[in-house]
Image 1 (cartoon, protein in one colour):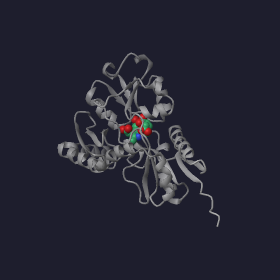
Image 2: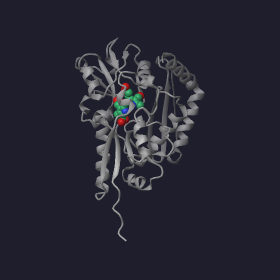
Image 3: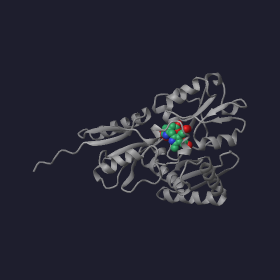
Image 4: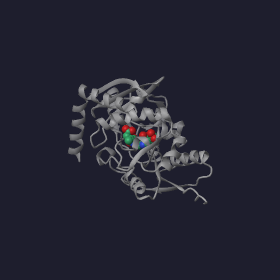
Length: 320
Ligand code: DPM
């Protein structure tokens, strides 16, 4: 009997420039490991790509950038989807799993400045300088440290945001280092924001591949590009977020590091006015990554994080 040739692997991606760069990178890696397999990319627009004028935190749907791709996987139109891991909800629809996490790039945030501030850093931006971000996490932590700065929403893809900055609508904006670097715009990173000032988002800087839990062929292929230390760090971070989050974007930041097999997780919950920060650090062996995240979440709750989360949820619902 002649075995039938292996099926073509269909990869799903959002259409944004960043998403396509990430998906092509994954495709190229897999093609290198499996020269005889055929890989195809299909692109889809997600809700998050269509709604560009509303602050993300107010849309409130956690699957903003993933839902259409998930329907595609459950229908069998595509076999897996490549996401920025930080955009992948911590609870996935039944039948789908986080099948693979790739090696993380720099997970920090960057300050990007208007040319008139080329000689400044976060510490030296003048009173009243307008800083663009739509991330409640960035907003709350930066307000805490720099109450004299003014924060203003900014939406759109990376190029749109950089254009709005260069056109003078903002004195500075905050973006992920990893996104700028992947798009070949690493030269726009003016200052890497230190973890002591602002903790990064859960999963930031890593790619997450979502696939059907019942698809051993795809799961086996993906092991070739899995980066275990990144995966363990992100499991801890995602367990922390899953344990804390309501149904909306809240100011939650993390940092993780390995020392031998010991994983250390720092987590933070901040109030929107930047007046209160609840922050703590715990360590555990890497095999206990998920329970480390859960434990840290419980510890922050006991230190006042729950009141902050309840207030934010009420505020977002009130503002509709
Ligand atoms: C999520 C947030 C943002 C993105 C919220 C946060 C930033 C939104 C904004 C969950 N997704 O980080 O607190 O600043 O208005 C996003 C970016 C990347 C993936 C761009 C960015 C690239 C970096 C990566 C948008 N998603 O954060 O500057 O892959 O980690």
